[in-house]
Image 1 (tube, helix red, strand yellow):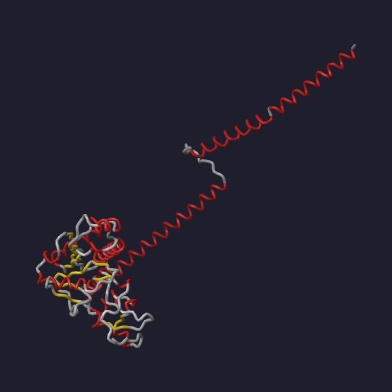
Image 2 (tube, helix red, strand yellow):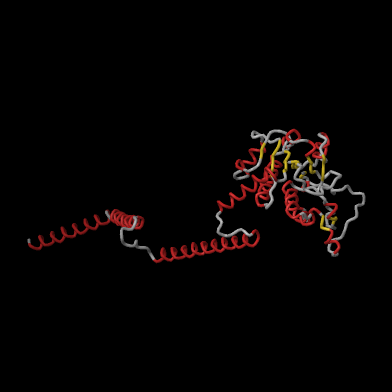
Length: 342
């Protein structure tokens, strides 16, 4: 009897062990899941502790994070140092080139520029940009013209003796005006005149001089009593003598830059020669001459070697080769690249 009881107890104990093993097997996945949940809680708590602002004690960071932080601080310090050096270099250039004291602030310089431009309105030379021909221009041509106007205005701001600029035949509801607002930051606050009137009705005709490459007369000087006109036209279809014919219709004097008088044709691979310039290039020549009273220096600044012209003194030194006229029309053959008429 005792043996039977002992055997039954052993069987009962084995059943209990098997049942426990089954329970462990059944709950194995839940146990692992619960462990992962605990790990996620720990990680979340650690992340919250890192994101929480420090309360009197430093936030703990791993060595990897600390190394990255030190690397980033070095980069920021190097950028600050580089900006400081660049700022000092610009100040030194301003002192060397223009004599402006480095202690002057940007606000003072802006005020000085504004004062010079407003003074030019009353006593400086006047330049009109005739924008009455833009309705025939494409979107691409309008964008190019807007860019030329931006560069022209920027050059005038930097000039020691600026011109007073007037944009005539320019309406605020035109496609060009919208393009200027889109491309040129601060265009609405430019210090210049904008009018819908035509330049021929805005000023006395005897004071007007239309600058066109098709004129027979070379410009000799910049007269303060005259109003100079540039045709605001970017024409990829290469329509010849547009500005010249318009000036003749209104019986207005015309003039061209003295490129033929001070420059000669140089030999190039494409045999390309052109006197047609963008309006900002023409303005750079006028502005430089007005300050220096030196045509060769002014032409050198505005007429690039790609136009096929060089100064005569370079020819005398034996550098370029003069190309004979050979019956070719003055100004050379026109291509799309040179089709910006002024």
